[in-house]
Image (tube, rainbow, N blue to C red; front, top):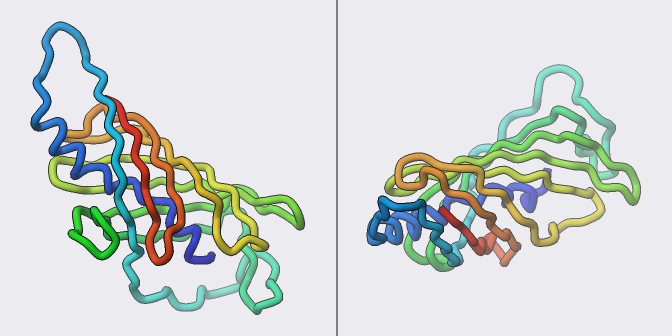
Length: 178
């Protein structure tokens, strides 16, 4: 898998802004309040050891570069640190797992289904995305990640995050409600 697919899980950056915002927001006993929140954070993959070669046969056919093509059921995981600005203050971390759900052919993309958990002060946020991929495209187009819920200060959070490649980072534009 190329590094660009690993940018999928950058949802966690929203949590710092949410903690600050919800801690200051007054509670209403009469009716649930909808709070709209928009902000931008940056995710950078944590570089670690690459796993060794798998034992036994590798699923999928080999590509022209000697790397096996992805096969349905293949999975990978990655982690990112989350920042307010590129190279700025670290505000959290995330962990994402992706599974190949569909393998595309020439001119037809495959699909990854990715689920991420993002932790910051006050709780965690969960998100997921069905992401098309192609071995012909090095850098993915911007995509939206669905925020599916959270814990602690982030209970009942919903919304979406636009992920866009931005050099060595993924730019994350958050649009959240509670």
